[in-house]
Image 1 (spheres, helix red, strand yellow):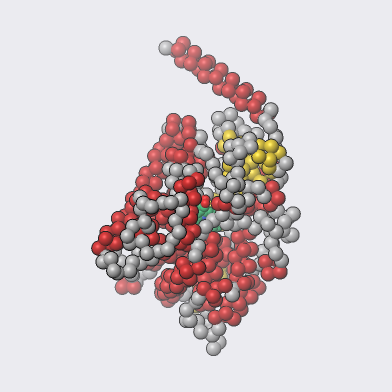
Image 2 (spheres, rainbow, N blue to C red; image 1 turned 60 degrees about the horizontal axis):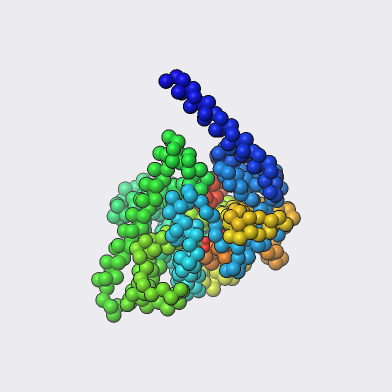
Length: 530
Ligand code: HEM
């Protein structure tokens, strides 16, 4: 028995040694050797990925220069931190070699490469789904309509803020907690036409006076609260599936448990979305044909190619049968999942920079007041928002310094030349937006927060790309930009927001997106002289 064990040990040791020798021979003779941390056999550079992955990548880019390499298992990824290097990858032509993001077993197991939009590899399905989303959320009619939903959602939040400030003077508000709930209630309502109560649920937790608590169906409150939590777990699980090699996920105790937990989380989200679809299906069935249906995204998805389809959406690829429940669910998840955390975190980062720069804040408030005048209650319009040029510059500058999505990856579908080197089809490139946006070759004094950069000068191609670029550029960008500026106007028209600790650094973590971890503020109704 002992002998068998010893033999097994020797065989394993020889196998590991031979594989390692082979691994390093391949590594040291690779084509286009680039600077980067030396990888380890089996895991590549995985041991470097603990903590804030995005912050680490930014450090590596600074250390190794504008182009460096990093290994995930034995797969080499090339990171690009200069706008000129990403020209081909960001080519907007549909004939681009960089339409596919990644071929990755972990993402297959997560179920995102065959359905939906963001990570799908089936280009025909991607085109159909993306086109569907583009024809809804990117239209001016939709954006105009969303302005009033943003305003209604804001008024609810405003009421909660005022009540909390009344309960206790100088209340400390956990800003990210509020804004992610604002974004959740807004996005789910816009997508499904159903109100959710995540702001109300959070308010109920904070308000002490019993009869001031908001009465809503308890299961609804719990459902949305849990959904926010589950969505965050989903974002974290993405890195797990993408980065951790299948061997480890399937066979190493402890890691297997994580995988199971993450897969269960996906099931929970599926079930949550299924419920919305089921209920809306029933409602549509019960609505008489002559009665017009609500025009939320879910309704458009359910009624597409049915006799209830009243929208003039131009469908692609000769599609003529209704979408399946699974198709609807995945498109819905793209909008809800893609929209909530990104927009919320972006607004928190903007707030941080505004509060840190009183001169910027003052000028922004002057602009908001000049557009809305003395009447603080007048409804805001889409046209008002397009006049907020300085607010737009602030949002751009905040997203330059702290992009919510710091990098995106794409895979070459054909052999190609990038950065003056020949690469084989299948090579993965990371467009490192954060590094590009801090590159001193593109931006003088890159660390300085200066919205005026965008008031005076035109921006050089690919130097500011918080929504990505090229064929897979974010289809939610117009909605996100409009939501941001509308919220800036609504918040600062009515409130003075200031940091509890003006010296605190920006606290963020990374899980697929940069996430504002903590931002404590005072929110006081503005005092007006008139
Ligand atoms: C501040 C808010 C947002 C930021 C910073 C952001 C950023 C991004 C980025 C960087 C990409 C990848 C683009 C590329 O590969 O070049 C992306 C893709 C995407 N975003 Fe957004 N996004 C935001 C809001 C939204 C919203 C509100 C929605 C939906 C309503 C949305 C839906 C999507 C979808 C579906 C994709 C995948 C596109 C594809 O692969 O074809 N995003 N977003």
